Image 1 (cartoon, rainbow over the protein chains, first blue to last red):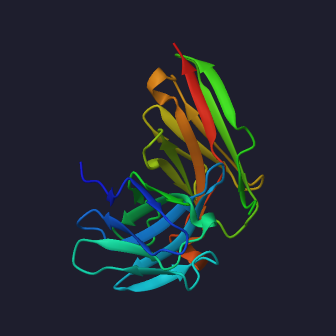
Image 2: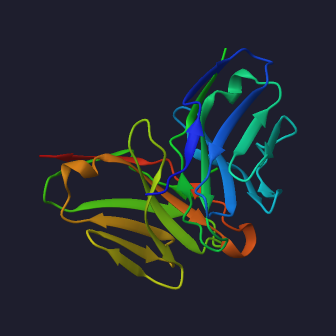
Length: 114
Length: 114
């Protein structure tokens, strides 16, 4: 069964460093998302991406965050200067068309900022 | 953000009995509702969904009920199996205004005892 894959599974980084979280969405999907879950809190929407541009972003997704689809398969989330409060599980998701919110999620990347 | 709320952090049921997970929402713009299941160290897995034009959707052992006037939905699992033990998230989408962005509840840990 097709699945969304994320790498790495766990990333530890120093505060102030840049990190790139990588995702390979399901191949025929056109809509891509990043969500995060801080420990003990809800899963929160960060950004959605379609046709090589951001279609929606939350208030969490500030100038420190960026997304990119550098080739036909990868979808990345970059955090330019990490803060302690960026420590969370980051989930990539994809869906094959809009109007169908049933997004398929990857297994997540646990980001720990020290 | 209290737009989607799952008031029960945990639920324990016996194998073979019915599990009922509840979810309340406040945003009247929500028009599509989903349930996700999550095992430890995995991403959320889509389970079942319902549009606001319906009040019930069934898929095998899983049935979702929507009561729009009460802004309440529930997931029924019958019969419950030990493999159903997981965290269950309710999520909602306002397709007309916010596209496919999902707003999640806190989750309910379901434990099915053999």
